[in-house]
Length: 135
Image 1 (cartoon, rainbow, N blue to C red):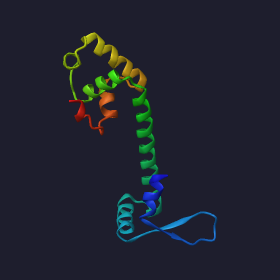
Image 2: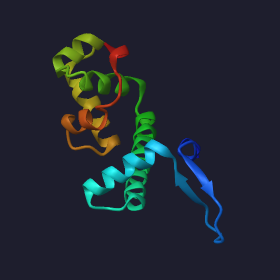
Image 3: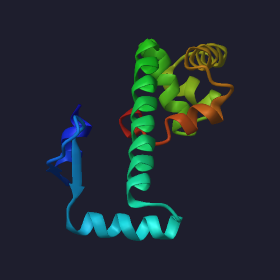
């Protein structure tokens, strides 16, 4: 619901006779939307709907990723963070003072829990996350 409240700041409500709410875009936002729609060969209404749908999908993916992250043990989270920071198995093992085989086991469990095929996919999934505190 927070997203809806954020979007309402950019729109003003219009009175309509139908039971659906209708909003009109304000100023610069409308101009930008019209220009982008023209460039994309679309209408401002369709472009706004597409952008909103894409953002809502992105938010859902982030929510699902966070839920899956919380299923990881603390040690698996540490290992996942190290993987995302581009450390190799031997480096992770040395940093966490565990055996390389244990690191590989943790990575296997992480990939399984997150339903990912490999470390590259893990890095891509969490590319926007800040793991600087794990260094």
